[in-house]
Image 1 (cartoon, rainbow, N blue to C red):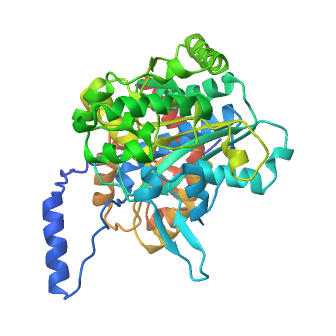
Image 2: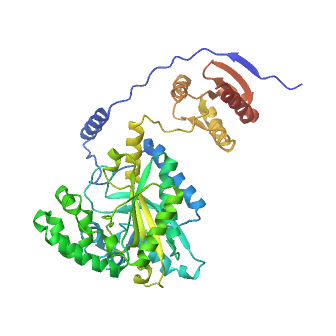
Length: 469
């Protein structure tokens, strides 16, 4: 006959509420402590930010969504260096763009090479495609990336000087279906996160078509020059297309009657654009035609798009991301003529929009529940507990623990705060007997089990607990 497990009724542990100190109190205590020790405390550089453990509940689902979409749509992961030659971005983005003229972090390396911290990833992906001869691979070549970018921009909500993007690039595929596929990936990314979005879309046509349009655009804006902001007066000469991207209120008014580029597109460009829209209609991806959408980079041809939160109050802030087709860039960067399309999504902006949307609609992020808390008493028990913690991981049980705490009462208070159904307790006696105590946190009933049977017994109990719910 198998030995019966011992069951005992334990006393309820009185749990006290933990009062968290305010941010102001923490800051004052930090400054006071540093002053008393005669040490200087340090703050972040302007425009930089820390990603704290409390924000993991946003970052982790985003990476999972990005990774799952990449696997499903057959994008391979690429990692490129943060530092690149400055000429890579001057050539790809173009002089006259805000990124090149104002925002890049650039310096001369010790060997005399002029380098910069990457402000975006498309140029790096193109450089890798050409450098590694990926045109010899079966086309299309599809890449995705996740990482930090750097721009000396004016800091504001959701916009930092070091920021993170997830992006997808497709090389060697000229068909409009490639444009639609990337827009679908962007739409699904936010759908998976629970944030409704819509696509703003336009076509810039070919460079020749765009050149003809610029003549008309400049003529129009020159007639309105007195109404323009100082920056747009400079853009009239340097980069006329950026006139349509100005956010100043008076320039917005002028833009309303500006000529639309769609009227300067040839039959082939119009046909490509209409096919992209037909794909989006078939996919039921919500979109708005935006004749003034130009994006801020010079390498785009044909389709350009941006992603906005569908909620008007959130979307009024800024685009969450965007992209488009850049059929001439690979050749411009020294490669063979290669059609390409790509997009990038700003992660900090996306998190801010998701927080605002969830708060407005009273939505709590669904957290994976912790199933058990592992508590210990004594040095020997702590050693055995660490082993048990590792075994529970491989056993598929989601746990919490705190090896710094020595008081059982304190550890059970932590377990109660996490609302775990069970606590696993190992003390000196359990170490000697090779056992562990499983405590039902609701009833206080405790069961002594063999450590070798801990995982199956605990999983059985968790199954019963789920059934009761």
